[in-house]
Image (cartoon, rainbow, N blue to C red; front, side):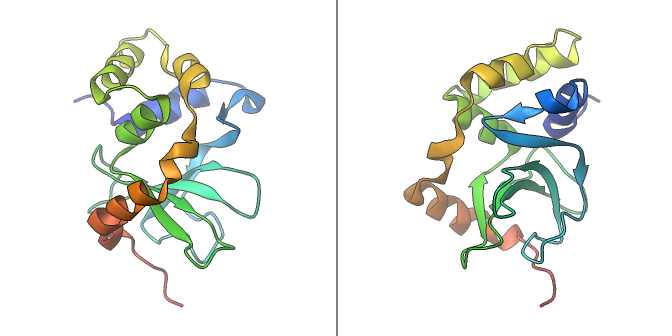
Length: 155
């Protein structure tokens, strides 16, 4: 069995020196953080990127206690009243949508990465622009579909 998209993604960035672990201006956390230190971070989330401003970070939701290929990606904005927003149905979808490519094209990059032909980080560096991932119509649909998977910490 091959590694999950998330494991492959983190492994690709972990191979870089710390100052190089960037994706569209966000710092990729290697290793990801089980407890990023904010009350608004879902208890079933694993933080993998930080914007570096106002505590904004990105996390993948564990499903049935594990990060899976169908685990949604959320943006956590601790200073906002709408503090958790689902931005993609999966890490593959998050990266594909952010790069403006099909899931199949992104999957081919993961396959190459797993086969020892590192291309993922350089492709993401050139193509990933996450601003449209937060378009309201898009996130409303994603929150309606996956929002129930967000496990809130007790208040």
